[in-house]
Each structure stands twice: as structure tokens, then as C-alpha cells.
Image (cartoon, rainbow, N blue to C red; front, side):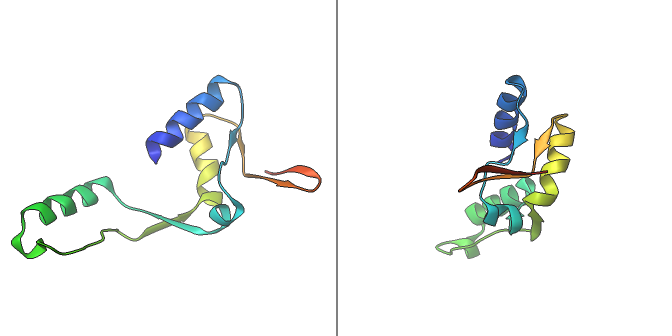
Amino acid sequence: MVGSLCVYASICKHEGRWLLFPGSRVAWDGYSDCSDADLVAEQHIWAAVDPFAQKEAFNCVNGDVFKWKHLWRFLAGKLEMEWVDMVEEGRMGLVWWR
């Protein structure tokens, strides 16, 4: 996801646009989770070589949660971009929050 966000931000910055959150209101206000890439890599290695992991399903997360509405301003700042919280299209056209 980080790579995709960087490409999106690069395009927005190149075109002189604000970093606009591309998701829904539910995603904006709700909790999302993420996992550390090193943890997931270690889990994959374990599952591939440990005999106790054979023919078993597993899920690996480290429990980190965030809300996009809290992360978006930080992300835009790190990328040195102007930002917009959320845009929704309603009966009166686009509605912007900042």
C-alpha cells in the first residue's frame, strides 16, 4: 500500500494538486490495520520450513491500527504537500473537509 500511495502522491504533486484522500467516508472514519513487513516475512519463512505449519492456515498481524483521518495530514506533511481530508459527492456537488 505504501508504494501505491507514493505513486499517487507523486502524480498529485507533479500536477500541482492537493493530496486528496481517495477512499470512502467509512474508510476515513473507521479503523484500518497494518502489519510490519519484517514480521510478515518472518511468518512466511516459519510457515515454509516448520513441520508444524504444514497444511495449516494462519494469519499474521501485529495489531497496529490507525484512522486515515489522523494519518492523512501527517502523510501529506512528510511528502511536503497540501492536503484535503475528505471529499464526498452529494446533491450539491463536491463537499470538502479540511
